[in-house]
Amino acid sequence: MIKENSGKIFRFKLDNNFGFGFAEIYDFTDVSEFDGRLVYVFNRIDKGEKSEYNLNEIIESGISLGPIRSVNFPGTRGKYASKYIGQRTNLLINKIPETKEFQGILINENNWNNLTKWYRSDKFEQLDSRFVSYSKLRNLETRILSSIAGISTKFTMKKIIDENKKVSDFYDLNQRGNLNLFVQLINTYYPIEKTKKLLSSEIKNA
Image 1 (cartoon, rainbow, N blue to C red):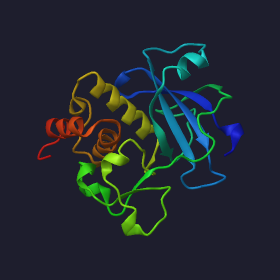
Image 2 (cartoon, rainbow, N blue to C red):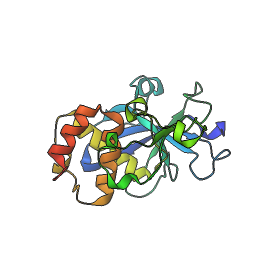
Image 3 (tube, rainbow, N blue to C red):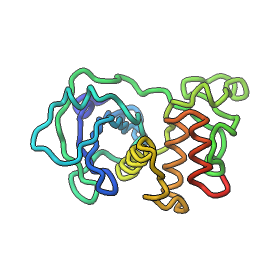
């Protein structure tokens, strides 16, 4: 891990003018150059901008999403420009966390619980002996790469769901990109019964 780049906290914009979220990054590109950028998103959402922030207050809000693999680190320009807030010293992690892995193509199934060939990234036995039921690794993240824009959208979707609103009122889920983020979100951060309800209410022919 590149410690000087890790533990940095940024403020970023949510979609639909919903305010601002906060993310913490970890740099493992010295270990894995392709997918070594990890992002955690905090629970805190601010309606407006502030000139100063208390890092402890942000950290104490808890983790909402992550660690999500990111294709890049937060930038300071463009629609999803972020603001550097500060850097913590008591890091959340010091090695790359385990992930859930699937042997096959995820894009063809919206309910990941229906898929059987799941395994954990820290298991390297014979392939047919390491498959486990999805319930045993549901809460783990995948190694699917997201952009900072995608992470912002996923967090905005979570806010919408947690406020008992319909994601499809804000996003076109017929668009593959939006659908993929929605499916990733609900299959990782919500229990199976909640996922089934969201799929039936948000997606036609689910």
